[in-house]
Length: 253
Image (tube, rainbow, N blue to C red; front, side, top):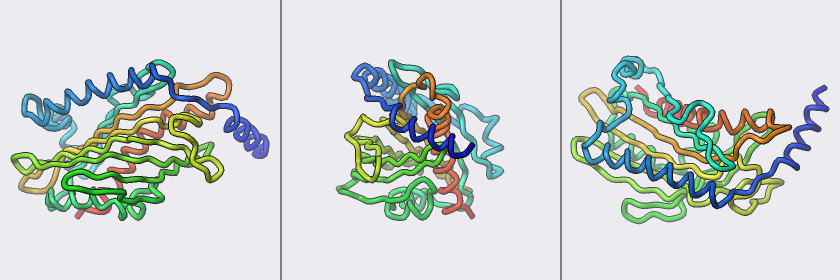
């Protein structure tokens, strides 16, 4: 039986490819623009700084050491033309920490493979002032093993009141197939875009850490969709949870 499943998976890898379409990119960019407006309001003070501030019923969970995550686009993502947008937010509280230490940890890209389970390789390609370009190799094992190289454009800055904001926007995502990088926006479409946003806030006892992740994947294909669906549905949720778990283990006291 396991050999039959293996053969079906190999067939799926060969058949279920998808190229990113211009209309998909356009709709994702529109959604990201909406998120950018929301974040600008949070940074500018016309809206609560963190999502958690607007959901005080979840603060006790976070203070107790739990990781709180929430799908803002629904657990299955938001449908766009030939794709799905996945919008997740998650929060932790790092007791006894300083916001500068959290910032430095997040900027220490070469350390990330030893902290985050899905990150196998990491490098800083360039850095100038409060901007950098980084590259991560991500590996996710489900029914299929997914290997991705993602380049990010990063930016960070301090805000009044012991707060920091950091963003990482993917500028190139390449699937690795047979040890070779496929052209960007081709392959199986497990991940076409991945933008992340950190909001950090110091208080007397520690640091409130919030991570927002907005990603784009293909939609669920018919037929062998049972193979693809768990990957494209669970990847964003598991990625944000794993990132916060790694941060908590590395910096928690």
